[in-house]
Image 1 (tube, helix red, strand yellow):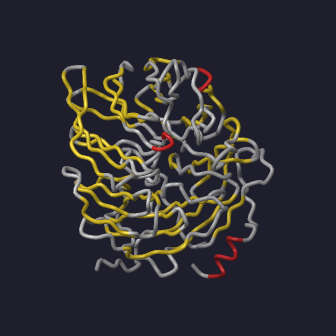
Image 2: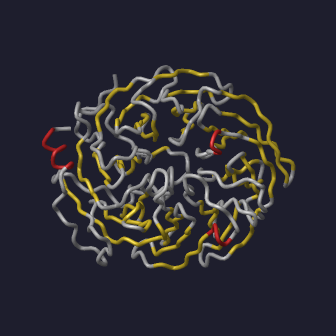
Image 3: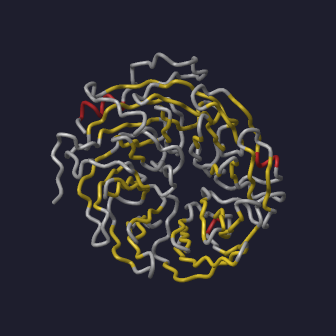
Length: 440
């Protein structure tokens, strides 16, 4: 990135966004700076990433025709928006809009933007998280014309996704007699048909299914004695049985998706009770991983009628993913250890295919056969998704948006790469088009 662009971004961004459907009620109105004025907007249809880790929850973009190598200073920066609030939440896209959330003043605030980065509306969702590592956590979930979001303090809200009007809300910690966890709730809620799935980890309920139109409970899974985790739940289907896979502070639990019945509980103890990575399900097996040296486990899921159980197949201490997520691609798991080693494991055997420092400890996403790796120190890398080696083809420094770590997971959608650091969101053009596609 050129020094001129760095200076412009680092300075106060001067172009105040206009055309909002209603005036943002915040101390410092959001601002957007456009850098590539000739860049065409991505289509609304192509810009669909409605929930954390995408439509299928696998964190794999369907984009093709992307650059296989970037210029030395990174791909073209199209625009940068500041004023989204401090936080670690990712972005989602639907309806030709981009959504995220962050701390603005003393409130957790949801922000909606158009595809040009112009803020359309902002809506508060309860008190901001101001304790250890202040900032937002969970990412909004878009389902049809509605947006669902859970704040770090347990406020679960349903908004009109296009206008930002509140439809219903409740606090899941208060409602289900739960205590908050050390670094605040961090799940991005799961929508399953007509239900919103959340995990309060309380005495009354470990997992809850709420009617998505009213917020009223449909079923609850009784408390397991464990508090909530920091992870987002996943939905699996094995031999006709639909199972919600959720981490608690000390275990993986499987819940029957249709009734809330607890099917199994597999102990997974970590330092500080931090289970922060979403379970990965594939072909009758469940992969879980946690940081602080706990490591990874592969579990076989056995279904008998409407009952289910799990047993360990293999364990790998070396890949102890903290909260940057992992991706399953073509029979291999890719992710970063808590010690900052990018690793690839064979899904079936757990064999380590490689271990490399790459850009440093961080998060990732996958698009067009490439790993997009973002370190928690604002280093962005492009890596071929192969088990042979971890070769960083291109890298660049993401401009700082604040003093906190860059923990928001990257998103590639509609030919754009979205990188969020604290109070700022950056959109990069990663389409190849007429640009040279380097394949060697």
